[in-house]
Image 1 (tube, rainbow, N blue to C red):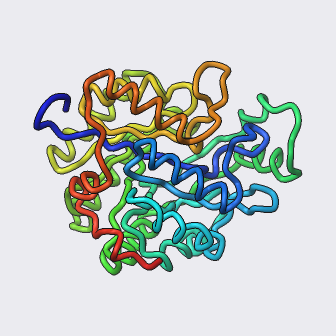
Image 2: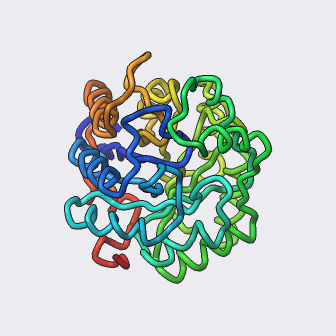
Length: 313
């Protein structure tokens, strides 16, 4: 990818997510104003794609409320060229109907799409928190010990048809294990997913594949075997594994994802004070390796997106 005439690297920033709780970092964006400002700063720092969740501004708890989403989505769209990518995964305990309420209303260029049901263990975070800011946080983390994130074949098919076929939404296919790549291949074989498709391989979430370099190699080999040249690859390393894995992945030809949803640390023991800090670090690493950073328009071309003028907000 490095050098003249070679495809630039797409940097995605996941701005707030539903994994971390407010007590872990005072810098996690919680209110619509904070989410919008943090997203805009990330775009200015080099993120071509902004992956967005919403939180209750009163207590920072993840929410699927489309009214809260709509209080910041137009603001972001008006002030950045970056691609807006809305979650369909939502947060722990949300129904499929709740998770799709905003995407169905907003009809964005992109949505994330988890490619299977899975254990999603966040409870180890409890061991790293001494004092909680809000009453809901500790119970929410502990309940993930007995939680399965649901995305059945019927759920995925419904999302592909209702968002993809009906509204022209393209997807960030989130693959937490090799089985998710095979699930994606199933939908490709059925013609419900058409190239080029954006495959986000995710490492280091308890319940998914691990963060070892061999795990990254295994996912890349599997995706290459299943999809050949029909996919655009991206790497998401959770927590302290982020910078190592995305550097390795970029060298192998991949795109990268960072942001406070995935990692709250800028370096060992140092909290990232903004999403822009994380994006700037990733951009600096990529440039030191002689990679070019994809602009939003280049990302749109690479992923064949419908354009910001065709969204519903």
